[in-house]
Amino acid sequence: SNEDLHARIIAAKATLGDRAVILGHFYQRDEVVRHADFLGDSFQLANAAQTVPNAEAIVFCGVHFMAETADILARSDQAVILPNLAAGCSMADMADIDSVEECWEQLMEVYGTEPDADGRVPIIPVTYMNSSAALKGFCGRNGGIVCTSSNATTVLEWAYERGQRVLFFPDQHLGRNTAKKMGISTDLMPMWNPNKPLGGNDAESLNEAKVVLWHGFCSVHKRFNVGQIEQARAEHPGVRVIVHPECPMPVVDAADEAGSTDYIQKAVAAATEPTTFAIGTEINMVNRLAAEYPQHTIFCLDPVVCPCSTMYRIHPGYLAWVLEGLVRGEVLNQITVPDDVAEPARIALERMLAAKP
Ligand code: 13P
Ligand code: SF4
Image (cartoon, rainbow, N blue to C red):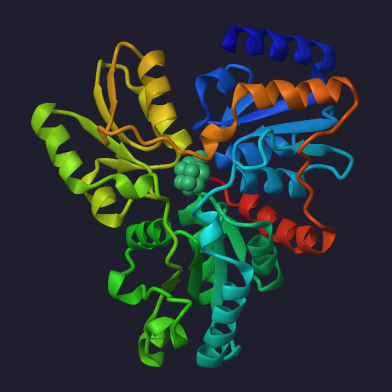
């Protein structure tokens, strides 16, 4: 039962002490969150992986790309464990390294490699954290950088200091929403279709582009729409609508605010007057906020439950299993990024960590 698992996790943690640290993303279910030593958004968890010197093992309750990132950033003698190896991210799977390399080659043919008068190269690759280690390595090898939803603006500013344009992958929505917030016209944001030459664009529109967007998206955040926001405003006058920037642009435009999971958490925590919040993000997080802050009315914009099914695959049974493995001296479900990928990926990730939210 859940209570048995709860007790087993507590017992294993007590035996391990600070030899093991549990990192948990805000989207994890409550039965996992209550055991996390650190709870955070993806930027904070990447940072946390670098700041647990005593841990022999980092148990990452999140999805695969987050565990890969932790392995790249942690010391080489620290093992990173993903309690269920089937916890992936469908958005991260939408950009594979071969397609991105192919895109890059075609863009190089259009743009060349000559810097402009200000020394800016034609294009800089930027990958969202929600991507494979191979893509982060690609960015590290090609003068690029990683971003999260909390520092995307700072990262794009970094990129435009060094490049005239950006290739942004895998999430079209985060790329579009961030560039728009920076004042870039959506006319200058062509989308890349990997199945067509030049992504289905003509060379002229690519030349004028400020951001070339990959076609990826998050299937959880894609469910939010403007109609839901209109309905929330009609039913709850004065409602504060906050959405994650993985939502489509019209949804972000219609909301009052958009920000990372940590932004959403802090916005609710900081509200001093009883407030009604309509939130556009994953349901486990929204329900937890509603339970933690009963003085506010907090609900999810999507009336049909919208969990991230892969985050949900970290069942407390897997957490108990990997912790008890560590107690026996066994490292189960280890995530290891090979050195030839990890080294360039670390360069791109360290640039990201320097770009504070
Ligand atoms: P955050 O960086 O806001 O935690 O987002 C991670 C994520 O996967 C959102 O879908
Ligand atoms: Fe990936 Fe979306 Fe789940 Fe985040 S919420 S881990 S982007 S599928």
